[in-house]
Image (cartoon, rainbow, N blue to C red; front, side):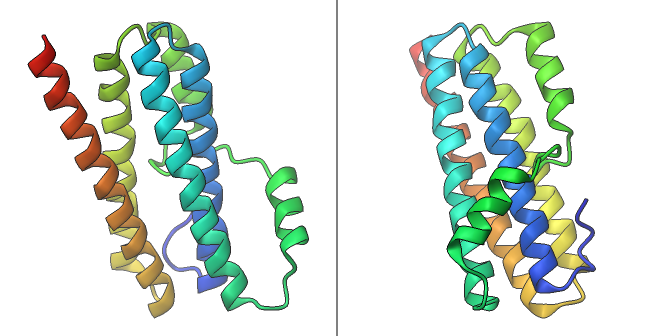
Length: 164
């Protein structure tokens, strides 16, 4: 688990793996959801997490110019990501979905807001404790991205309330 004391390259790898774990969770949540709206919400979130992974990968490669794209893609395929960006193990979230089943968009939004809020707090904590200035900048950027997710989910929830 990332602590904020990593150098920039290690921080990028840890952030990449957390984003990967979250993307995998959202993808599985989409597959397990019984509501079309919940499926769509989780699919969109999974796509956003993939964009975060792409962003982090490009940062890593720009910092560490000697790494080939193919070797990073192999790393991505071979490496498991057991933790989400919220600091919650993927298996714990999967168990939560299996236990409660996401039956509607409201339940999907509630779970996603919890994950994204915790992710924001984790990146905030990491940015405050980062020893490496560049790692601090990366964590602050990830914080900003998580806040965009939270705002998006809040807007969706407001629209949902207006529908009912």
